Amino acid sequence: MKQIVKAADMLEAVKEARNQGRSIGLVPTMGALHEGHLSLIERALGENDLVVVSLFVNPIQFNNKEDLEKYPRTLEADLKLITTLEGADSKVIAFAPTVEEMYPADDGCATEGSKPAIPQEQYHFGPVEEVMEGPRRPGHFNGVAVVVRRLFDLSLPTRAYFGEKDYQQIAIIRALLEQIKYPIELVACPIVRADDGLALSSRNMRLSPEARAIAPTIYATLEQAAEMAEYEEVDDVKEWVLDTLATFHEINPQPNGLRFEPEYFEIVDARTLQPIAEWSEAGDLGAVGCIAVWLDGVRLIDIVKF
Image (cartoon, rainbow, N blue to C red):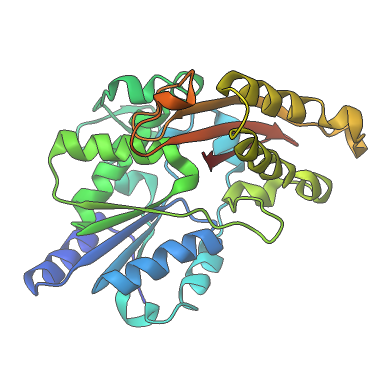
Protein backbone atom coordinates (compact mmCIF):
# COMPACT_ATOMS: atom_id res chain seq x y z
CA MET A 1 0.00 0.00 0.00
CA LYS A 2 1.24 3.42 -0.92
CA GLN A 3 0.76 6.38 1.42
CA ILE A 4 0.63 9.90 -0.02
CA VAL A 5 0.35 13.20 1.82
CA LYS A 6 1.00 15.73 -0.94
CA ALA A 7 -1.79 16.76 -3.32
CA ALA A 8 0.61 17.04 -6.26
CA ASP A 9 1.92 13.51 -5.65
CA MET A 10 -1.64 12.20 -5.43
CA LEU A 11 -2.59 13.73 -8.76
CA GLU A 12 0.57 12.48 -10.43
CA ALA A 13 -0.07 8.92 -9.26
CA VAL A 14 -3.63 8.75 -10.56
CA LYS A 15 -2.79 10.46 -13.84
CA GLU A 16 -0.27 7.73 -14.50
CA ALA A 17 -2.90 5.09 -13.71
CA ARG A 18 -5.45 6.79 -15.95
CA ASN A 19 -2.95 6.96 -18.80
CA GLN A 20 -2.58 3.20 -18.45
CA GLY A 21 -6.34 2.79 -18.80
CA ARG A 22 -6.83 1.69 -15.19
CA SER A 23 -10.10 2.32 -13.33
CA ILE A 24 -9.94 4.15 -10.02
CA GLY A 25 -12.25 3.85 -7.03
CA LEU A 26 -12.39 6.59 -4.40
CA VAL A 27 -13.44 5.93 -0.80
CA PRO A 28 -13.57 9.29 1.03
CA THR A 29 -13.25 8.94 4.82
CA MET A 30 -12.31 11.04 7.81
CA GLY A 31 -10.33 8.16 9.27
CA ALA A 32 -11.13 6.32 12.51
CA LEU A 33 -11.92 3.39 10.24
CA HIS A 34 -14.30 0.56 11.16
CA GLU A 35 -15.88 -2.42 9.42
CA GLY A 36 -18.28 -0.13 7.58
CA HIS A 37 -15.40 1.69 5.94
CA LEU A 38 -13.69 -1.60 5.18
CA SER A 39 -16.80 -2.83 3.37
CA LEU A 40 -16.61 0.21 1.10
CA ILE A 41 -12.92 -0.36 0.44
CA GLU A 42 -13.49 -4.05 -0.25
CA ARG A 43 -16.19 -3.27 -2.78
CA ALA A 44 -13.98 -0.67 -4.43
CA LEU A 45 -11.14 -3.20 -4.61
CA GLY A 46 -13.43 -5.66 -6.34
CA GLU A 47 -14.62 -3.15 -8.93
CA ASN A 48 -11.49 -1.13 -9.76
CA ASP A 49 -7.85 -1.49 -10.70
CA LEU A 50 -6.72 1.10 -8.15
CA VAL A 51 -8.39 2.39 -4.97
CA VAL A 52 -7.77 5.74 -3.29
CA VAL A 53 -8.78 5.89 0.38
CA SER A 54 -8.71 9.42 1.74
CA LEU A 55 -8.06 9.87 5.46
CA PHE A 56 -8.79 13.52 6.16
CA VAL A 57 -10.76 15.17 8.96
CA ASN A 58 -12.33 18.02 7.02
CA PRO A 59 -12.64 21.05 9.32
CA ILE A 60 -14.97 23.04 7.09
CA GLN A 61 -17.83 20.54 7.37
CA PHE A 62 -17.98 20.85 11.16
CA ASN A 63 -20.28 23.55 12.49
CA ASN A 64 -19.49 22.49 16.06
CA LYS A 65 -15.93 23.27 17.18
CA GLU A 66 -16.07 20.78 20.03
CA ASP A 67 -17.17 18.01 17.67
CA LEU A 68 -14.18 18.74 15.43
CA GLU A 69 -11.77 18.70 18.36
CA LYS A 70 -13.14 15.42 19.68
CA TYR A 71 -13.33 13.64 16.34
CA PRO A 72 -11.14 10.51 16.59
CA ARG A 73 -7.80 10.64 14.77
CA THR A 74 -6.22 7.19 14.46
CA LEU A 75 -4.09 7.33 11.32
CA GLU A 76 -1.58 4.60 12.18
CA ALA A 77 -4.32 2.18 13.20
CA ASP A 78 -6.28 3.07 10.05
CA LEU A 79 -3.34 2.26 7.81
CA LYS A 80 -2.81 -1.10 9.51
CA LEU A 81 -6.51 -1.91 9.16
CA ILE A 82 -6.49 -1.22 5.43
CA THR A 83 -3.57 -3.61 4.92
CA THR A 84 -5.66 -6.48 6.31
CA LEU A 85 -7.80 -6.40 3.16
CA GLU A 86 -6.95 -8.73 0.31
CA GLY A 87 -5.34 -6.82 -2.53
CA ALA A 88 -4.78 -3.66 -0.52
CA ASP A 89 -0.99 -3.94 -0.57
CA SER A 90 -0.85 -3.62 -4.35
CA LYS A 91 -4.01 -1.66 -5.19
CA VAL A 92 -4.60 0.94 -2.45
CA ILE A 93 -3.27 4.47 -2.16
CA ALA A 94 -3.93 5.97 1.29
CA PHE A 95 -4.19 9.74 0.89
CA ALA A 96 -3.70 11.47 4.24
CA PRO A 97 -3.10 15.19 3.60
CA THR A 98 -2.85 18.00 6.11
CA VAL A 99 -5.43 20.79 6.20
CA GLU A 100 -2.85 23.14 4.70
CA GLU A 101 -2.24 20.70 1.85
CA MET A 102 -5.95 20.41 1.04
CA TYR A 103 -6.66 24.12 1.39
CA PRO A 104 -3.48 26.01 0.40
CA ALA A 105 -3.46 29.77 0.77
CA ASP A 106 -2.37 30.20 -2.86
CA ASP A 107 -5.42 28.34 -4.19
CA GLY A 108 -8.20 30.86 -3.76
CA CYS A 109 -8.56 30.25 -0.03
CA ALA A 110 -8.82 33.04 2.51
CA THR A 111 -6.50 33.08 5.51
CA GLU A 112 -7.08 34.49 8.98
CA GLY A 113 -3.96 35.00 11.00
CA SER A 114 -2.20 31.69 11.58
CA LYS A 115 -5.31 29.64 10.83
CA PRO A 116 -5.41 27.33 7.77
CA ALA A 117 -6.77 28.75 4.54
CA ILE A 118 -10.54 28.56 4.13
CA PRO A 119 -12.05 27.75 0.72
CA GLN A 120 -14.36 30.43 -0.62
CA GLU A 121 -16.44 28.46 -3.13
CA GLN A 122 -20.14 28.08 -2.44
CA TYR A 123 -22.56 25.41 -3.61
CA HIS A 124 -26.35 25.48 -3.53
CA PHE A 125 -28.40 22.30 -3.70
CA GLY A 126 -31.95 23.58 -3.30
CA PRO A 127 -34.61 21.57 -1.44
CA VAL A 128 -32.36 18.57 -0.79
CA GLU A 129 -30.19 20.65 1.58
CA GLU A 130 -33.09 22.51 3.20
CA VAL A 131 -34.32 19.55 5.25
CA MET A 132 -33.05 17.47 8.16
CA GLU A 133 -29.28 18.03 8.50
CA GLY A 134 -29.26 21.18 6.37
CA PRO A 135 -30.92 23.73 8.69
CA ARG A 136 -29.46 22.09 11.80
CA ARG A 137 -25.86 22.14 10.58
CA PRO A 138 -25.36 25.42 8.68
CA GLY A 139 -22.51 25.20 6.20
CA HIS A 140 -22.05 21.46 6.67
CA PHE A 141 -23.07 20.36 3.19
CA ASN A 142 -21.10 23.14 1.51
CA GLY A 143 -18.05 21.91 3.42
CA VAL A 144 -18.76 18.36 2.29
CA ALA A 145 -19.16 19.47 -1.34
CA VAL A 146 -15.92 21.48 -1.26
CA VAL A 147 -13.79 18.64 0.09
CA VAL A 148 -15.41 15.97 -2.09
CA ARG A 149 -14.84 17.99 -5.23
CA ARG A 150 -11.20 18.46 -4.27
CA LEU A 151 -10.88 14.75 -3.70
CA PHE A 152 -12.47 14.15 -7.11
CA ASP A 153 -9.98 16.54 -8.70
CA LEU A 154 -7.01 14.89 -6.99
CA SER A 155 -7.99 11.24 -7.46
CA LEU A 156 -9.76 11.34 -10.87
CA PRO A 157 -12.04 8.44 -9.87
CA THR A 158 -14.10 6.22 -12.09
CA ARG A 159 -16.35 5.44 -9.12
CA ALA A 160 -16.83 6.95 -5.66
CA TYR A 161 -18.16 4.95 -2.71
CA PHE A 162 -20.33 6.28 0.12
CA GLY A 163 -22.24 4.56 2.92
CA GLU A 164 -26.02 4.90 3.16
CA LYS A 165 -25.92 5.84 6.85
CA ASP A 166 -25.20 9.37 5.61
CA TYR A 167 -28.23 9.17 3.35
CA GLN A 168 -28.70 12.89 2.83
CA GLN A 169 -25.00 13.31 2.07
CA ILE A 170 -25.33 10.86 -0.80
CA ALA A 171 -28.12 13.00 -2.26
CA ILE A 172 -25.87 16.06 -1.92
CA ILE A 173 -22.97 14.33 -3.71
CA ARG A 174 -25.34 13.20 -6.46
CA ALA A 175 -26.49 16.81 -6.87
CA LEU A 176 -22.86 17.97 -6.86
CA LEU A 177 -22.00 15.57 -9.69
CA GLU A 178 -24.94 16.89 -11.69
CA GLN A 179 -23.67 20.46 -11.23
CA ILE A 180 -20.02 19.90 -12.06
CA LYS A 181 -20.73 17.34 -14.82
CA TYR A 182 -18.04 14.90 -13.75
CA PRO A 183 -18.44 11.39 -15.29
CA ILE A 184 -18.09 9.63 -11.95
CA GLU A 185 -20.31 6.74 -10.88
CA LEU A 186 -21.63 7.26 -7.35
CA VAL A 187 -21.91 3.92 -5.55
CA ALA A 188 -24.17 3.91 -2.47
CA CYS A 189 -23.36 1.01 -0.17
CA PRO A 190 -25.53 -0.60 2.54
CA ILE A 191 -25.05 0.26 6.21
CA VAL A 192 -22.86 -2.13 8.16
CA ARG A 193 -24.14 -2.79 11.67
CA ALA A 194 -22.77 -4.30 14.84
CA ASP A 195 -24.28 -7.60 15.93
CA ASP A 196 -26.69 -5.70 18.16
CA GLY A 197 -27.91 -3.49 15.30
CA LEU A 198 -26.07 -0.24 15.98
CA ALA A 199 -24.93 1.41 12.76
CA LEU A 200 -21.15 1.48 12.73
CA SER A 201 -19.75 4.98 13.06
CA SER A 202 -16.43 6.51 14.02
CA ARG A 203 -18.32 8.48 16.67
CA ASN A 204 -19.36 5.27 18.44
CA MET A 205 -15.93 5.05 20.06
CA ARG A 206 -16.79 8.22 21.98
CA LEU A 207 -19.72 6.53 23.73
CA SER A 208 -19.24 5.41 27.33
CA PRO A 209 -19.76 1.66 27.92
CA GLU A 210 -23.15 2.42 29.48
CA ALA A 211 -24.24 4.52 26.49
CA ARG A 212 -22.93 1.95 24.03
CA ALA A 213 -25.05 -0.68 25.75
CA ILE A 214 -28.31 1.17 25.06
CA ALA A 215 -27.40 2.78 21.71
CA PRO A 216 -28.85 -0.16 19.71
CA THR A 217 -32.26 0.98 20.94
CA ILE A 218 -32.19 3.55 18.15
CA TYR A 219 -32.24 1.00 15.34
CA ALA A 220 -34.54 -1.36 17.25
CA THR A 221 -37.03 1.52 17.41
CA LEU A 222 -36.63 2.19 13.69
CA GLU A 223 -37.23 -1.47 12.90
CA GLN A 224 -40.47 -1.36 14.85
CA ALA A 225 -41.40 1.80 12.98
CA ALA A 226 -40.98 -0.02 9.69
CA GLU A 227 -43.41 -2.68 10.89
CA MET A 228 -45.88 -0.02 12.04
CA ALA A 229 -45.86 1.53 8.58
CA GLU A 230 -48.02 -1.37 7.45
CA TYR A 231 -50.98 -0.09 9.45
CA GLU A 232 -50.20 3.37 10.90
CA GLU A 233 -50.19 6.82 9.29
CA VAL A 234 -46.92 8.66 8.62
CA ASP A 235 -47.40 11.24 11.37
CA ASP A 236 -48.30 8.56 13.91
CA VAL A 237 -45.13 6.60 13.14
CA LYS A 238 -43.00 9.75 13.45
CA GLU A 239 -44.56 10.69 16.77
CA TRP A 240 -44.15 7.17 18.14
CA VAL A 241 -40.44 7.02 17.28
CA LEU A 242 -39.68 10.39 18.87
CA ASP A 243 -41.73 9.65 22.00
CA THR A 244 -40.28 6.15 22.42
CA LEU A 245 -36.71 7.43 22.44
CA ALA A 246 -37.41 10.59 24.44
CA THR A 247 -39.11 8.62 27.25
CA PHE A 248 -36.80 5.60 27.19
CA HIS A 249 -34.99 6.70 30.37
CA GLU A 250 -38.27 7.04 32.25
CA ILE A 251 -39.12 3.39 31.67
CA ASN A 252 -35.51 2.20 31.82
CA PRO A 253 -33.59 4.45 34.30
CA GLN A 254 -29.95 4.74 33.29
CA PRO A 255 -26.76 5.40 35.26
CA ASN A 256 -25.42 8.94 35.25
CA GLY A 257 -28.74 10.23 33.94
CA LEU A 258 -28.15 8.87 30.43
CA ARG A 259 -31.01 9.57 28.06
CA PHE A 260 -31.78 9.74 24.36
CA GLU A 261 -32.38 13.24 23.06
CA PRO A 262 -33.93 12.97 19.58
CA GLU A 263 -33.07 15.92 17.36
CA TYR A 264 -35.35 14.89 14.52
CA PHE A 265 -37.00 11.95 12.84
CA GLU A 266 -38.30 12.60 9.34
CA ILE A 267 -39.99 10.29 6.89
CA VAL A 268 -39.11 11.44 3.40
CA ASP A 269 -39.23 10.45 -0.24
CA ALA A 270 -36.14 8.33 -0.79
CA ARG A 271 -35.17 10.17 -3.97
CA THR A 272 -36.05 13.83 -3.28
CA LEU A 273 -35.64 13.71 0.53
CA GLN A 274 -38.75 15.84 0.89
CA PRO A 275 -41.09 15.00 3.79
CA ILE A 276 -44.21 13.02 2.96
CA ALA A 277 -47.56 13.21 4.73
CA GLU A 278 -48.99 10.00 3.26
CA TRP A 279 -47.26 6.76 2.36
CA SER A 280 -48.70 7.04 -1.14
CA GLU A 281 -46.68 10.23 -1.72
CA ALA A 282 -43.41 8.26 -1.84
CA GLY A 283 -42.00 7.91 -5.34
CA ASP A 284 -40.33 5.06 -7.17
CA LEU A 285 -37.70 4.46 -4.49
CA GLY A 286 -40.21 4.43 -1.65
CA ALA A 287 -39.78 6.23 1.67
CA VAL A 288 -36.92 6.39 4.14
CA GLY A 289 -36.86 7.44 7.77
CA CYS A 290 -33.87 9.52 8.85
CA ILE A 291 -33.03 10.17 12.48
CA ALA A 292 -30.50 12.13 14.53
CA VAL A 293 -30.24 11.42 18.26
CA TRP A 294 -27.95 12.72 20.97
CA LEU A 295 -26.67 10.19 23.49
CA ASP A 296 -23.90 10.74 26.01
CA GLY A 297 -22.90 13.95 24.23
CA VAL A 298 -22.52 12.12 20.92
CA ARG A 299 -24.74 12.78 17.91
CA LEU A 300 -25.78 9.54 16.21
CA ILE A 301 -27.61 9.23 12.89
CA ASP A 302 -29.34 6.29 11.26
CA ILE A 303 -31.95 5.41 8.65
CA VAL A 304 -34.64 2.86 7.99
CA LYS A 305 -36.23 2.09 4.63
CA PHE A 306 -39.99 1.68 4.43
